[in-house]
Length: 151
View 1 (cartoon, rainbow, N blue to C red):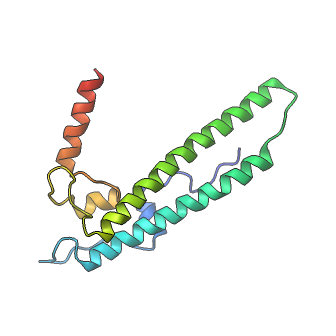
View 2 (view 1 turned 120 degrees about the horizontal axis):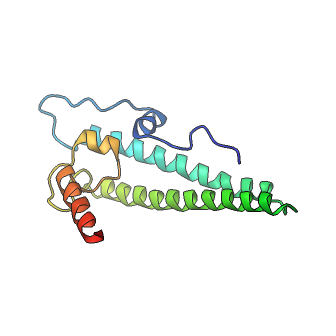
């Protein structure tokens, strides 16, 4: 299966794709002011658009590439490749939903604050993961709890 160059996207390439540089916080600047909100809205919308266009291209690609190979090994290889693509598509779909939820938070002016303790998440953390809804401390505690619960 043909590999796309931009398949795995890091947060820095999401910034570049959105056409923005890392936000430069100005001295005495209020957290989540209009400039910061616009910065993150642009990032989130560009990321969502990029994921949606990738998703829209995979179904026709799979239809074009599907063949009924007589060789069972070739058929199994193709089925495995399609299975991987469908799992990736499911992950991307979940991420698109998270981006939509985050964009609603932006609209409702709830963006940038921890869902658990309501403190500022921070510009750099949000640039690394624009859909983050927990501050680093609460996220760390959540991961510790999950690890303890899973054994």
